[in-house]
Length: 345
Image (cartoon, rainbow, N blue to C red; front, side, top):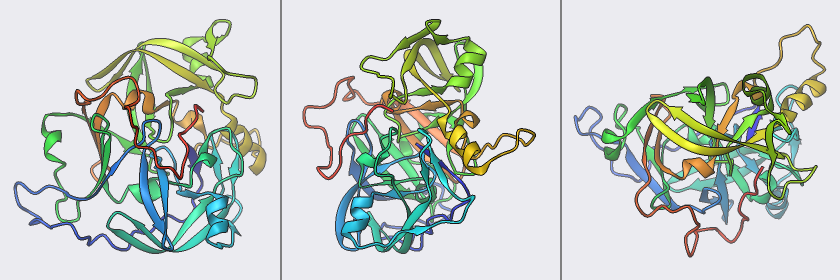
């Protein structure tokens, strides 16, 4: 869960993959599957090869720029560089990322890239990003279609290079939810929660669903001791210390009942404003600010569905997860040994 300024995006240089192509204008043309991966239960992972070394990266649709851990950068002898002022990335806990590294060769599934830049993760973070070898964010993901089959615990990358108009076959009977993308290519959808109309981001990088403290206070009149309960195990240092039980979240025909949502303080905005020394008369910045997307729908709710993300046509397809889904982790969850599960924000 990170937000960013206008830093250079990942350039996808090889989309003519090894998948079989279909005629571009055929009536039954569908995007070609480039790769499928097993997912962990508390985070979505994909295998990534960097300069010949294999790692497991977290898929973060709520991020903005892909990241690499300092430990991996050190192992690969990658020298960090500092980005220009104003292009920093701010995380949900207020941590600022202002250094990047460039890797020589990167491969994810059939995609092979060269000279790819990654923001360098912090050594420590309350947002949990430093628990991974790296993250793959929309700067890369938006070049593909994404199929998250949480019932079967798999994720697929698909190319619509030859099939620009139609999604995967299973989406024909799914609920279609139009979305918009912001400057960081987040998947932003209109939602109604307990009668209040707002917007939400679909975020596979967040283990839990969270609401901005501003929305909780302004529209629901929630405060500690006034509708907000302290989360089990939370401490004064916890990024998400309080939570509230809501009745219903509605998303264009999709309905989630009885969901507990964490309350996220807007520390990202505080850091961004302090760092850039915005004057009070100036408009509040929206790029790196949590309140620009008041609600983040995380994996605790997303795992109940089968999701297909069509970035090009800005359409999200939603169906119920298959019968194999359960509220408990599988007996042998697919969690790459090189990483740790994401902690609760």
